[in-house]
Length: 127
Image (cartoon, rainbow, N blue to C red; front, side, top):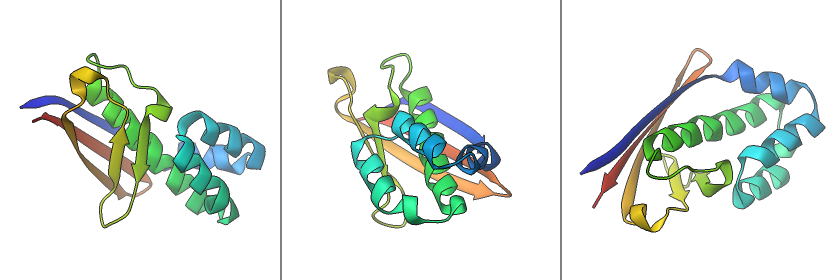
């Protein structure tokens, strides 16, 4: 049974503008939206990358986290750090700190990008 659907569309230029403001601003933004494992990866790997790669990493997480927030609401109000986005294969994966009511939910996620825009889609399925 589908319990929620969320979609978010993001202009990557919004995140690029944050990254261009400098490493202190970027670090503050990253601390706000990334969970501990994402933040660790960003600090170790992404901080040494060019601004475009940093913006892409942050924008991807922002977009998918917004989409899962919309899919879970009002059953659960998620915080940025409740959601971990990773990419171990061809598609992104999501790990969420669900409340008991949603503990058996499976999240199906998809991300698409074109022309400076990202679209994230999350479908929550109750088993």
